[in-house]
Length: 402
Image 1 (cartoon, rainbow, N blue to C red):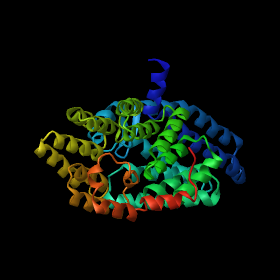
Image 2 (image 1 turned 135 degrees about the horizontal axis):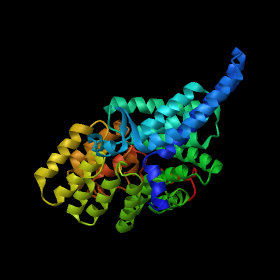
Image 3 (image 1 turned 90 degrees about the vertical axis):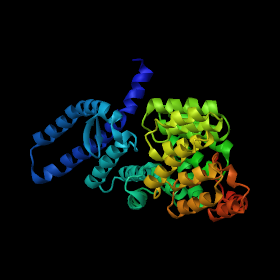
Image 4 (image 1 turned 180 degrees about the vertical axis):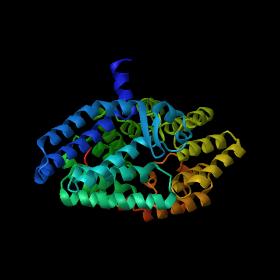
């Protein structure tokens, strides 16, 4: 195994994330031991024993992280997780590990602002990608994310990681474009080379329909963190939106190499084929995606274009049955692609009510051109605060610079 592949495999198996989480919890335990034990006259050898145990446990934790995955169903061998039926759903074992670690960290030290920010980011990930728990699960995660962000910012008002989480909430769920830009501008002034902040700047630029600026932000994020699978996905999406389908596929391939179970990576590659009229390749690529909402979206569109209507209808029916509370935007995309405008606008409005994270991509969405000549399109953009004149007004308030 060459070094590049080895480090990519470390990232795929979440060894880096486990190392960070172990270091955070270990540091907190040492602080508790050194500060509290003397108060109770506990011998110094007990403190040294705890430190030694933490040091010895570190390589053991890394070995376990390599060989096993911690899932909501318990500890499983990595190989078993890769082939388990849950991979066809939304594989999120690593974010579950992170959420557990951050939750434990804030319980041990409620004044640990960075851990509160990490906990918020973990809950936001669920809101962005997970379908489990339906609308209630989404609402619970969003509420927890808001609370964690506020706790972090009360402790450290200028913490870039907490500001990043706040801007994500303002963009993806509140559709507060001006607020998101202000928050992000402050965060970038504090940490201008933070890849996560640059990715969020690209996300916000895409929401505003600024394709070139979005692409530039995403290129910078990948240059700073080339083994970040999500950054690669953001870049791939930005490339696809600008018509660079072959280049986008190459980025999706790199993202898949880093994290084969990343939601929307295989389906994203499928979308690039779909936009080139290669419908069979699109369906085949999307079938490998771990996220049902992403897989079914592309399969339904591809089969529709192949005039394999019963298969397209079956995929759409499954999408509606499984994700109507958390994937309304993808359902709208299928109807828009089919030129079924009434149903498309019905599901777009439902997505807005459900605070669907797909809606920031509305202006750049390559599956919705059929809706652009309908009067309801401009009306819906205005409802979202994304009409041209609204964006011009908000631009005068300033936005992150590429």
